[in-house]
Amino acid sequence: MTQPTRPLEPDEAALQSLTEACVAFVREHLATLPDQPSFDLDGAEALAASFHEPPPERGGDLRALLARLRPAIGKSYNTAGPGYLAYIPGGGVYAAALADFVATSVNRYVGVERAAPVLSRIEEVAVGWLASLMGYPPSARGILTSGGSLSNFSALVTAREARLPEDFLRGRIYFSEDTHHCVPKAARLAGLPSGCLRALPVDERRRLRPRDLASAVREDRARGGLPFLVVANVGTTNTGAVDPLPEIVAIARDHGLWVHADAAYGGFFRLVPGGERLMPGVEQCDSITLDPHKGLFLPYGLGCLLVRDGDALRRAHQEHATYMQDVVGESGGGFADLSPELSRDFRGLRLWLPIKLHGLAAFRDQLVEKLALARMAAEQLRADPRFEVLDEPQLSVVAFRLRGPDGASEELLRRVHARRRVFLSSTRIEGRYVLRLCVLSFRTHADRVQEAVDALREEAEAALAE
Ligand SMILES: Cc1ncc(COP(=O)(O)O)c(C=O)c1O
Image (cartoon, rainbow, N blue to C red; front, side, top):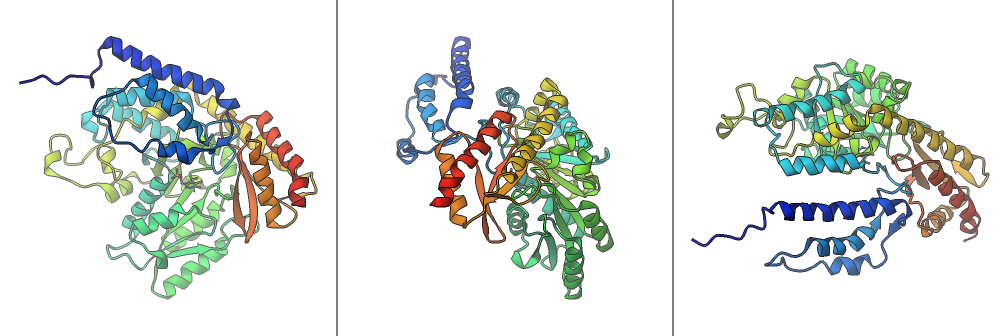
């Protein structure tokens, strides 16, 4: 029998060389990050086309492959850099990259507890830290997901299982019109089509109005619907609005509704001194979505779902199979019982390691700074009569526009982006074009926010004249 060559298992020297090549690549990238353009898509299409090729029969040289990758990385929004103020930034702390490297190198199976009981416990403990941060009792359980969309999906399925019969098409879900679009998407994926959804209007600060919720629930019930879930926002993507949780919870209790808090963007602000006051009542919600890849500054790919009654999460997800009998006991055991996944990585390490390495204070200080920077930007823009700031930031999003036609604000965004130092995004509110500046990356500090505000003010005149 001929022996296969074994390049898949590098010897020690090769291992060192391969690893050093990656470390050198990453170090150079991070050293130049603040000076890299805030976005660069020039020639991206042509470069993308150059990657259309068949798989090679023989392997290549890692350094050459990384060299090819470098310009490909450059052709993108610089989502890790300090100038990224669009959508919801995070940055991506390096400790999480190290955690991923270790976790995938040791490649342990953390789907069922018996296969890696200690690693499972480490992940459980890290999720427990987040649960207690949100004021949840020890009976709460949670899972780490790939992001807020999947967390909201599992929350919705858990609520559906807990509150509705198997024939659930009369189920009704309530949320504000500013709720993230992954919620209606999750509903559709969970078998609840648009007729089951009630997007309610918001108040002047873009928050769900409890009175409207109560009357919509009553009306639906009178028509034979089965109201079962309200999704409340702890920081909308549009403006960072926080819905009035205590009132929503009270209505939900009266009508037997599950309350899910989408705190994907805003939840981690509970870490700051007095943070409970930013989202009072979140601890009374039945479930909470958090996105560590937003407010804990971890790299993309880490969301979290917490469920107050851990058994409800299990009942919604647990299945049995005879071929699992060696690793799963009668009562089950492990993250597979709590989530749609079976095989999974040791995801918990990318949460556990950064917190253990840096300590919570490092994250708290950053979050305090982000709130202050958003207020600073809002104050300066409000002081300029050419700008209209929609609201005092409830968290770290500033929503604003030029006083003038929509086209002026659109032109302003183009002009500021052309400087390639900061990157903002836009939305529509009450039919009007609105700019958003969201401060959340751990790499964004006063100098870059000031630069953004200065650029907006410097380009305003020309944009209004267009
Ligand atoms: C409030 C809110 N919920 C949910 C999501 C979806 O999260 P993800 O993109 O991690 O799936 C986002 C994303 O920005 C968000 O801002």
